[in-house]
Amino acid sequence: MKIMLVDDSRTIRNIQKNVLKQLDYTDIVEAEDGVIALDKFTETNPDLCLIDWNMPNMDGITLVRKIREINKTVPLIMCTTEAEKTRVIEAIKAGVNNYIVKPFTVESLGEKINQTLSKASAQV
Amino acid sequence: MDVQYINPFVFSICNTLETMCATKVTIGKPRVKEANTPLTDVSGVIGFSGDAAGSVVVHFTFDVASAIASKFACCEITPDHEDFSDAIGELANMIAGSAKARFEGLNISISLPNVVIGKNHNVSSAKNEKRILIPCETNLGSFLVELGMVISKTNEAKQAVVATGV
Image (cartoon, rainbow over all chains, first blue to last red; front, side, top):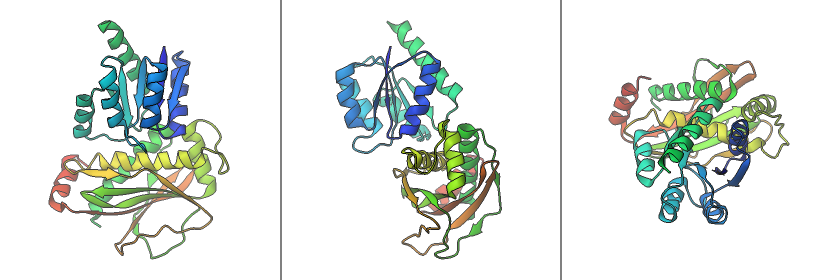
């Protein structure tokens, strides 16, 4: 199981990595913006992506749309401070499978990741 | 600045510190910032645009910034650590983002974080609007949140703040 973390904050990526390690996911790819993430996505073909919204160069919502042009099924989770309903709807329309609002607890992040992965495996 | 816009930030400061740092915050009495007052050593700055203009600045001393950043990142982060400014910027980002969500009905964008580091610096605004200082006390030390915000859709904003129950 390969998981890609896309966030311009290394601190957030480290927090997410710690949660994933606790869940026994250790194959992790990191990207600090949407442009780098898109390259790494095609190179590494991850099984799940956690994507921040506000990033330099290419934001998360643009990245989600670009990933969906090339891959309709990979589970995508938006992890962002953007908490307004309109933003959540916009992200779902763009193709995310789940949505986590920052600040998040370690438990809620783990729960959303597990939830998203079990839904995705049930659909296969 | 309308004082009722302080409440969403009080909520977001408490929520962010409690969720990410397991730290309770006691909010002191907000006061108007005096012009060019030198404040503290580390400032995380987030700008607002769209239906609101202005910024929120989170000010720390080096010691408190280090204690809070370490708790946030779950590892020791001193001011010379490569992730120090990143952690402070992300905290400011969460405080701004969480507050922004409580202004329902307004289209507000937040900037990427900027972090200013330097003993006793001041972050000034280009406009001469009143800025509010919100004192915050925690078991990791005290810090200040500076807020300057002007909303163009005033009536809608008031309704939005009331609607979200803050």
